[in-house]
Length: 449
Image 1 (cartoon, rainbow, N blue to C red):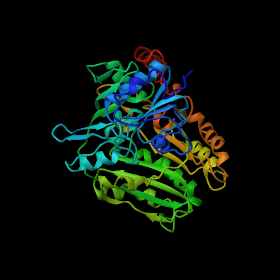
Image 2: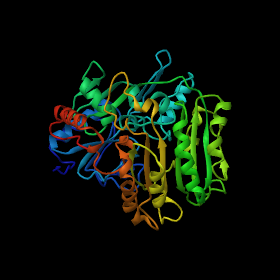
Image 3: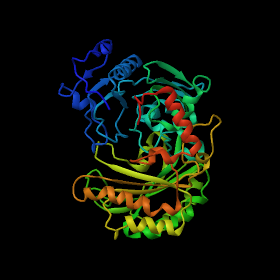
Image 4: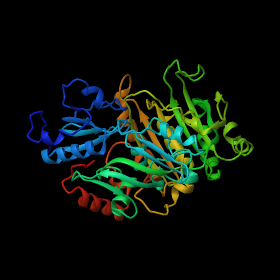
């Protein structure tokens, strides 16, 4: 049970040294400060602290501890899953420090830094971060939740390449966390993400990648069966330096989209390779010939253009999502997905995606972590807009999609799991270990997810 917070609270003195804005509901700028990318939720915390330093974060956590409130942290709000009622919300977007060390191939990034800034800064030194499909996502939250992108099969999860973390734990103390300092917390944060500490910065490895051969192939939605069955047999044959996914997309009538795609139901095959252009073109032949092609954007590209592969939305929008890992992708699995997502299914879901995993994603890093989903060969994720025509159908259709593939399901990455209880993602042993770390560093549940 959380305690309502007011400006007259006896513990408000704890916040006097905070340099950033401290706002209550009704204060000017409150709504703008708490807004997140996922517009399906309208955050209404009891207090928001716009942190500008780690000191601000620590003060907010100490205040919450004194008042009995919970604490949540938010950088971009891509992972927003509730209205945050009764909490102290720490917004970290002002923690935007970024330093690239080309000699050691690392980047130290503040909790508010988006991948776009890291991609651009690293590129100046011929390096790249292990970011995801959208560079607009916050680097820290993505990394701690087991994020993986176009370089994942070659290099592993972003969490596998975290060198250290600077955090504030639930007691309000600032700590440096790495393999030697608080190693149990270091293990848990990298993959466990929630309810452990508020991260203020992290240092991650960069990789020597400057270009890709990549992009997407759009096929008509009426060819979904042919494309998905081709993709399920083709994708597992690809080398580890190649990544691919395929998505059934119901595109909006957005003038920014090319005319052949605007407002259409299409199948989008995504592809990236760090190999040669000639090899990539040879590997792509089955995907290109699976069905008629509407648009083909695949070609040589600098890594800085990585957003163009998936072309994820860049403006805030309401959405709900759910997903799972898959042990295998057989004909029955694909048919189960098509029955709930193709043109004749009655689906209102904006996207249903299958992603090839494996490669380095299946292997533990040199310093093990709590990332889940290493046993999954593929992942499935559905996303819908719970607003407008058909929006009320989104929750049940997401549930039906993941239920339909249960015979082939296994734990997948946390970031792709969507809403709901995530406890079953980990083995009983790792679940117990995570619980023990949370009890040690947050016995009151101040940071509980």
